[in-house]
Amino acid sequence: MRYLLLAWGSRGDVQPFVALGLGLRAAGHEVTVAATLDFEAWIREAGLGYTDFGVSVAELSRTDLGRRWLGGTSRSTVAELRLMHEVSTLAADVVSTTLLRAAPDHDVLLSSTLTFEAGWALARATGIGHAIALFAPVLQTSLGSSYVYAALPGRRTILNRAVGALTSTAVQPVIAPVAAELRRRLGLRRPDPRQLLHDIRSTPTLMAVSPHVVPPAPDWPMPVQVTGFWTLWGGAGLDDGGGHVPGRVADPTIVDFLEAGPPPVYVGFGSMSAADPEASSRLLSEAVRAAGVRAVVLRGNADLHVTGDDALTVEGAPHDWLFPRMAAVVGHGGAGTTGAAFRAGVPQVVVPHMGDQAYWGRRVDALGCGPAAIARRELTAERLADGIRAALSPGCGVAAARLGEQVRAEDGVASAVDHLTRIFDR
Image (cartoon, rainbow, N blue to C red; front, side):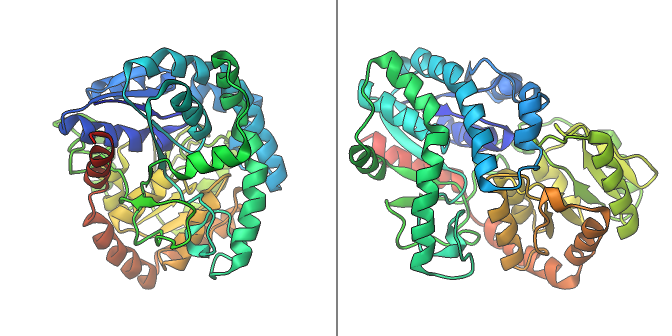
């Protein structure tokens, strides 16, 4: 079978698809990953086919729109959704162009949260097989621990479903521009909402998370295969994680820093932007100094830079190699970063900027693997230092280590490949 994986988004959206692609290839399938220009070399180096979306996430993140969208400054859900709609509108042309160009050469299309309606439209028009891959639990349920938009995260209540229905209604127009542009080019009418809902609910759906982190909900609106995280570490993935080729030696600068003292704390916000990179860097520097820890700081799209004998700023390093060597992880709460820290068995401090990141922060807290999340717009050096000290407490360390053992025992890629093969080879 020929698979096309729609990895529209940042690294957290791309890396799970690369891991799955390697698993599918090992099972004898042909795989193409559609992603932004930032990831072409990495995807090709992994040995997978590549087709581009014609834009760069890194460049977008440094525009005024990108900084407002990814900088964690939105003070309401409405404001955040408005910014997401601007980005979706901007992306509609390039995503539609890629879909129409690449889909005819493939048998199965895998879409994700931001592209599922576009994938549905294309599948309906062309007959290509279609499955949905979710990296966060965005499906309505009364179970608060298993729903990004839960009104009462710690409870199972019908209120969670009711608020979820309202939220889904608000979110749908945000991601609609891509599907609308695709329908325009295909000459399709706007779907009847009931028909769309019926078709989406009957589409095979995979959730690339650990059931130990996201408990499967009995009232999700469709059958969902919870597979475990899709990771590049082990299984069918690359041996050293992070998209690096087997045999490549780790950055000697990082190795030297690790060997020069006790395990440091990782600090990085991935693809998130910063309205004022210098101010953000000063805040982080003050926080790690106040907490009395050494730090490995990811520059990332926020352009962070922390100096001093006890800090090392890096351009990048594979999380699955780096995180097990850390005392704790301070991250933005992206599903990929949080999942890698869960897998590594180290405590976390989550600083949500947008989207589903607050949910992952809640799960870290609920599972005892770190303190309550600190929203980016509320972050101060003092609060971050307190959070780091809390994460380094014995209780968080024990809980994180125990959960890490459970997560590492799963092979999410193998489970997903088996599920897809059973569905589409039939």
